[in-house]
Length: 154
Image (tube, rainbow, N blue to C red; front, side, top):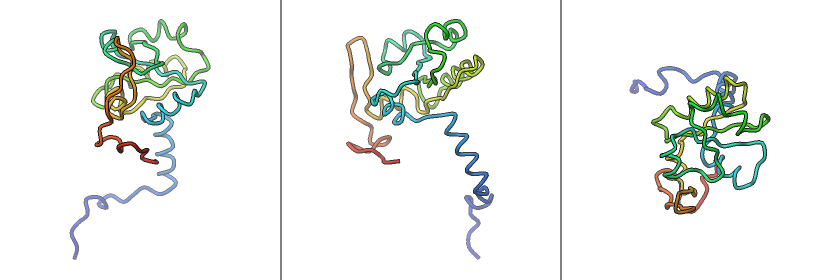
């Protein structure tokens, strides 16, 4: 008799349940590569929001992002974010719930919102440009997060 499988100990979901789960998951989040591609393509109706503090914003942020710390969303969203825009929130990285908290605040306002998984950390690690006080800068892509010089094609 073969070894007990850790993976198969609990069977995979029924395909219909898996479709519902993964479709729902993608309705709540977007990855940095897709956000970057949309910004580069000039997709309209999308606003990227950096929910970090002012010192963090000044250290570097996604070009074109709106700076709106979570504590200010309820008071300032209407003046900074078009009512018909889908908001994509980000914070430091996957170890931080800041983007989740910001997304919750936008949802409470009745705004369509997604969280950018990976946050600022993975944006930088994938080699995408950031705006700093010195201008636009870019670090080499980390080959553990992004294939060197090519798209993952996913």
